[in-house]
Length: 191
Ligand SMILES: Nc1ncnc2c1ncn2[C@@H]1O[C@H](COP(=O)(O)OP(=O)(O)OP(=O)(O)O)[C@@H](O)[C@H]1O
Ligand SMILES: O=C(O)C1=C[C@@H](O)[C@@H](O)[C@H](O)C1
Ligand SMILES: [Mg+2]
Image (cartoon, rainbow, N blue to C red; front, side, top):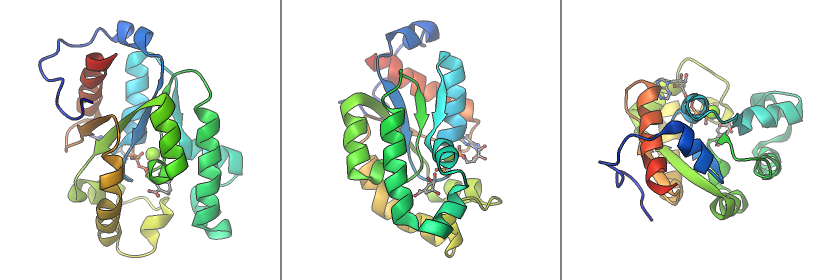
């Protein structure tokens, strides 16, 4: 299966036709700060599809922020809830679905995504993730110690799993539209 960069040289996508050909939800996976929410929103607008963010859907269902949920119920309860929220979201029409950073690491969620969606790993290096996650404190996992050390450990633990995604796209220190264009090129190649 084609992964990263194997669609170079394909003509630029006809975006409306690309959306018409889409029969599955596109699920964005990757670490905190990779840009799943930011890129996903722009990708959906470009393809004229709806955009859903599983973190926001979780907060709506829970009636509180993810930070508060972690504090009150702990991470394991969050993972249970996140699994259920994503299962529900994947029953809807094809859309662009940005997931929380840990969603694809859950075996059940990963199997569900592999079965019925097209997954895209937005990969970024440690320096970029640290830069993009600094300045905001809504990510409970990054509040338990030094964010760089935590992100570095998460890279070691999670990158081999994110690598199971159908498509891999690198996010560099460029505008999000550059990542959107890379994803569209990969989608054009396979839809
Ligand atoms: N080129 C870029 N691509 C993506 N995001 C960028 C880019 N440049 C800056 N950002 C910023 O990086 C920050 C983190 O991005 P975002 O919240 O989309 O990450 P995420 O992958 O959804 O993280 P989380 O798993 O915590 O939800 C945002 O403030 C976003 O605006
Ligand atoms: O990487 C993670 O495990 C997380 C990422 C965020 O998107 C949220 O889903 C939550 O803060 C946990
Ligand atoms: Mg997000």
